[in-house]
Structures are given as C-alpha cells and as structure tokens.
Length: 253
Image (cartoon, rainbow, N blue to C red; front, top):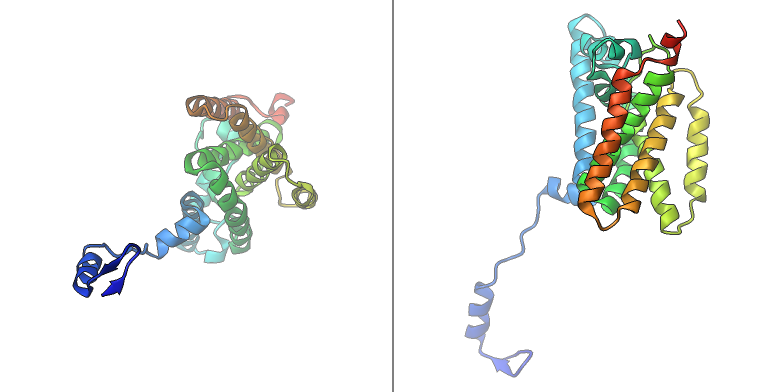
C-alpha cells in the first residue's frame, strides 16, 4: 500500500490515477519569449527588423550597400518629410517610425523598446500598451509636422520609445515610486537629442503624447470602454493635426 493524503491507496489505484492526469504542456520558445518580454513588444521589434531588411534589399537593388539602407527607394517613400505629408502622403508619419538609418540606429532603439516596452506591456496589458505606443508615434510625428523643417527627412522608432518613457513616468508617479532614476535617464537622452541627426522635436512630442495617453488611462481606470474612447480620440486628434496643419516654416514663407 502507498500512503496518501487520506489513508492508503493500492499501487494499481495510484497508476490508474496518474494515467488519467494530463501532463503539463510546455510552450514553445516563442511563447516563452512572449510571456517574458511581451508579445506586442516582440512583434514591434520584429516589424522594425523586417523593415530594415526590406530597405537594405532595396538599397542593394539600386547599387548601394545594404548597410546604407537609407539610400533606398523604399526608405525614400516611407520616411517622414513634413511638406510631402502636407501635400498628401498621409502614411509617412506612421511608416517613418518603423525605419532606421543604419544597423546601429536599429539596435539601440530596439534594445530600448525591449527594456521599457516589456515593462509597460506587463503593467498595461497588450492593447492599451499598443495604443500608448502608437499615440506616442503620432505625437512625435505631429511635433515634427508643426515645428520641423518642411523638407527635412525623419525616421526612427525613438518617438515611440520616448512615449513609453513618458507613460512609465506617469505610472511611477501615480504608484508613488521613486522617479529620480527615470528623470535622470530622460535628462541625459534629451541632451543627446540636441546632437546633429537626431530629432529633438520627435523625441519631445513622443514623450508628451505618451505621458498624456497614460494620464488618460489613469483618469479612466476601471472603465475600459471610456479608456478606449479616450485613447482613440487622442490618436485621431494627433493624426488630424499632423495631416492637415502646415508647419510653422511653411506658414512663414
């Protein structure tokens, strides 16, 4: 006989009982990675990497190095140029956020997205996190449209990444966590944004939009339909402004 939680059981009964229990199923590598880092975060990274490969192949097709992916027809058609957006290229404010100028630009942004995105996805859940990210992208694009160089070309996921930092900051304040480390990181990155080739406007626009989106989520906590309406409204307003309002420089011409 074999001791059980209550009394004893015969060996045959134990074997029969174990045979009726399904073994625990282990998820595959992708499922495990999704649980650890967040399915939406990994999907965003995959899209960015795929776009880099596409632009690299496009660069090769016109005789350039794949590392010069920014010298490709696909990159030229998808990057954000304010005057072209105003003239009707409505897709550029979004597509530009999935382009990167060279592999190092891609690697740095994807590492930041992996670290900060996975944390925010864990706190907000998949769909609210994705909404915050896309709103941040639109916020950065809108700032560039309003105040940027009309003929200047802009690309990169940093608008979305800065938005994630802004959203994390709001959540940390609401949860009464120490934000000194995050503020220090933001200050360093804002200073870096003044370097040539980086878009300070895009970074600040994404930061503010991400913080606003998180603020709306906090104010409507527990009311999911209202959260959806608030985030959708913010996204629509930003997109409408980005597509219809000419830049300050254009107005001054």
